[in-house]
Amino acid sequence: MGVGIGICWDLFFEQQVIGPGGIAWSAAALAVQGTALVLVDRSPRAWAGLGALAAFVALAVRQLAYLPLGLPLTFWSPATLRICVLTAIWCGLVGWSLQLDLGARWQDYRARRLR
Image (tube, rainbow, N blue to C red; front, side, top):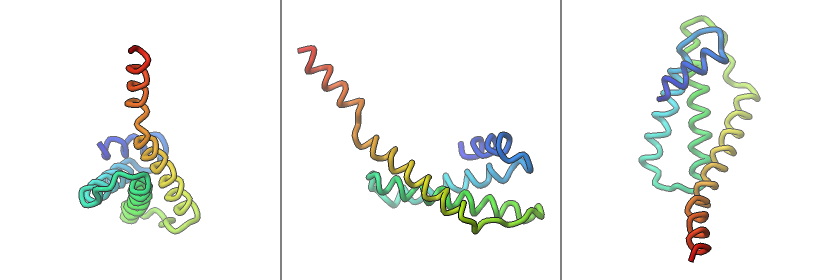
C-alpha cells in the first residue's frame, strides 16, 4: 500500500522524478509496522510517536533516493522538523479520537434511548 501512495504522491506533488516517494512511503510503512509490533501501546502518545517516526523515515529515505539522481540533498531544514511535529500532532489526534470510540458510544446511546 505504501508503494501506491508514494507513487501517487510523486505523480501529483513532486513532478521531478517518479519513484522516490514510493520507496519512502514503503520504508515508513515498514518502520511503523516493525515498531508497532514491538510497541503494544495504542495510546494517543504512541500514535503521535509513530507518526513522527513515519514522517522522519519517509523524509530521510526520499532524500537518500534522490542522491543517485544527482538532485540536491535538502534534508536538514526547518520544514523537516515542522513536518515531523505536525504529523505527530495529527496522528496523536487520530489516536485520541479512536480512544474515544464515538461509534460505540453512539450505539450505546441509541440502545438506551430505544428502551
